[in-house]
Image (cartoon, rainbow, N blue to C red; front, side, top):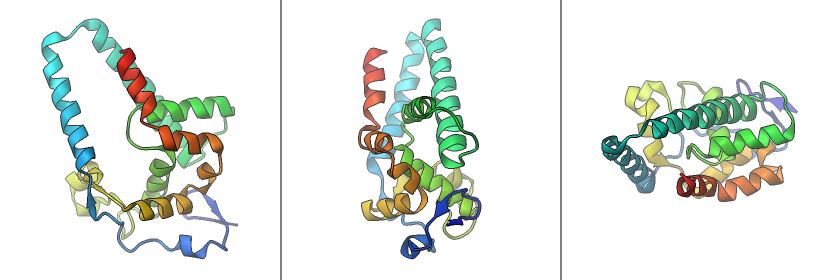
Length: 186
């Protein structure tokens, strides 16, 4: 077993085809649906300014703290990407579900991209290199997606630990549905 530098992930040396990083991240497909979703959701938020209730503002802040803070920062990033701490499986799964509510991506893809980012920070192979500019590294990289084959290869290489767990395979398949259910409930 070998530890990928900066990623904190053990990889079997027999997976040599998966170990070589791409010289440039595969980002040949413009993600029309992602860009459309980001624009529409922000416009919808702006139009809601005329009907704001303090209870709704409170719910917004609570969801931001719980889903963004606990789900993405603690769950997707510190726990799943870096394995910075251990916790009971039920808590791990709850944090992953909270992260999926942010609609940033399914857990295995988010983790794979972030592990690649940490392995090649601001170098060829970094999907969101700051060397390509402020706007690219903060938001524009979201508008370009890899092919399905490249995304699968990326996940097999950087997130094999998640792909082996049946729970994460299930969440990867249905990751948008918890957000849809929450939206209907709200």
